[in-house]
Length: 142
Image (cartoon, rainbow, N blue to C red; front, side, top):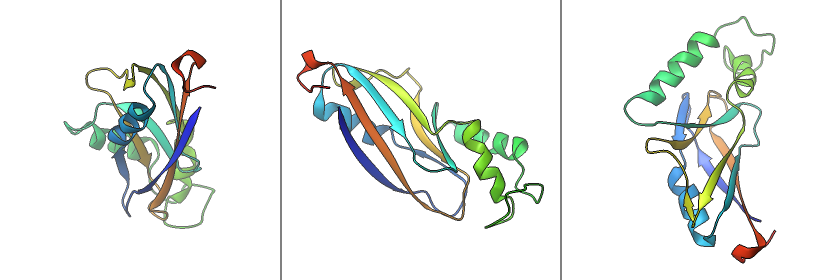
């Protein structure tokens, strides 16, 4: 298994950040077949595999605002108004995803990308752990 940590600055607004290029570079360096696990070790962020561009990312953020309004209903009450919703979001958008890798390339669908979803405007700095699991026959080992 190979692993690395990406450092991201997601900004001070709700965001959907495309990390597909970094993931593709990481698996290409090892090559071979396997599984890429993407994990964000934060209690207020998630990993989505979805179409980006064509405003789908805006639709996702709007849907999350409808499902998890940024108001004072949340019992978890520190930080900005509605911060508690950021702690609920990873139950809807998990903090991990696993993507197949074939011949050193992400086996994503035509319009799929890998994104970090972050509603927490109080913490703009994120880490993302990439772990590439390959079979022993690929030479990378377990």
